Length: 209
Image (tube, rainbow, N blue to C red; front, side, top):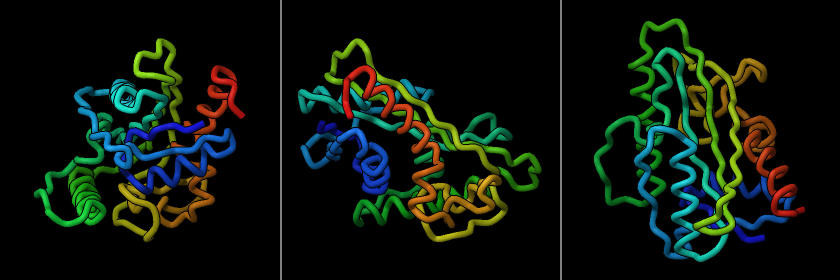
């Protein structure tokens, strides 16, 4: 089954493609089909994910899946939450998309460390909310939520991953997310947990795999 992914993030596309392949799902980034990004006006992951999935499905007249994810830090009242990707203000650039995303990630990490300066409670969790729809007006969207618990480090470590991965330490693995190989990350991450739930839902409700 082909699903349009309501995102143009190539790293997210690669992660989700690997996780959903067992159900015979082929993901296509919405940008390759000329679909622009949807507005994300809500304060919760599930509302934004549903909005993005319906937006993509409407423009391609078919099935779509969206992932709204982010970092929630206990000491910050759940922030940055749905604003994780744009936590810090970064001047718009005319460079390529991935270069701008890297600059945004670095700024986000710096701001997070500033907000947590002197804070001892550094508990946090990555959240991934996946929503899949068969059409824009599907009355029964499939919803899966994954949570990956960890702690925010004092300084970034590792060179892998993206976003807040260099600052998120996973006690059960003894490493920061940015130090994990792709196979380990795909086996344990918030997105892996959500994807496993989504696979089960797709097999049960959509009869895939």
